[in-house]
Length: 347
Image 1 (cartoon, rainbow, N blue to C red):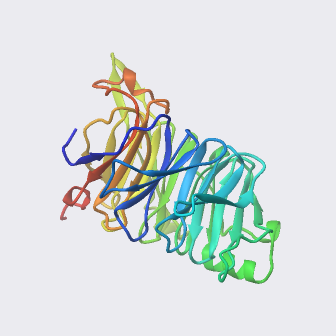
Image 2 (cartoon, helix red, strand yellow):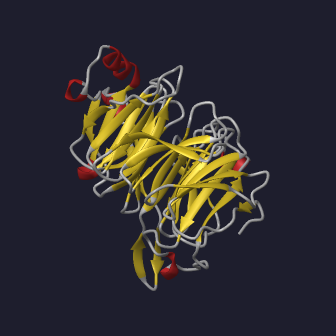
């Protein structure tokens, strides 16, 4: 492994998500099936702070303008704040099944959570007290939520049944301000995934013009929001994270996905324990990093685009132990410094 990787202390269980701070590239949140949320300061990586919750944690996000508060959701069917300064947690909202995804929206001043209970819940916070609304807005969905992403203008939710629903944030804000609730709030677009198998991750392009999804069957799809025929003609999908193992063509799930916010390139991580960087405009792979010790479970770029957090988990899908050149296994987060290697090549 390249010397550029900063290795955070090993985890005892699978790492479910990683989230860099929106302004400070040295601060990283991570969540684990060990029921803890961790706050890492990469300038002093050996001693992360941690806070425990009930049930395995599946996702984590930063609170607005805070260096010590985040939101977490998981198998306890709850979204809670985690405050590392006070060591306290507070209930944001409850779901009827596991919370798979947690995001923060500046534009809505709300926590958005997606669950296996087939709902998206929008919990506005009081601007003066930061207290959560006792009555979250509940958007009913046709399937379980697998991945969720929020930008300034869009919310994209990838679900079971190959369903992708997209909300326009300004229209959603208007509907909420008008007091609309539930089924009165319609998504902007309802789509079917271009990928034939179950989706694992979705992320929005930094320019807000489209999104990328990945599937369990070693494929990635690049899509665009604008429904115009000439724009839709530009969408495409490609195969990745495949290798021949003992003469058999083996396909791995694409579990990690992250856009570089500066360069517009994106990284994918797979069950084969590898991470690749792609240029969506040139439709080319820029590079593949040396194999990590176990299947990739999450990826995230820092806001300055200079660091990539790579989470790997030995119990995740894909089982690298059978893959050629497999590592030692284990659960961890390594930080890769990636200056020019994530820049698109000059045309």
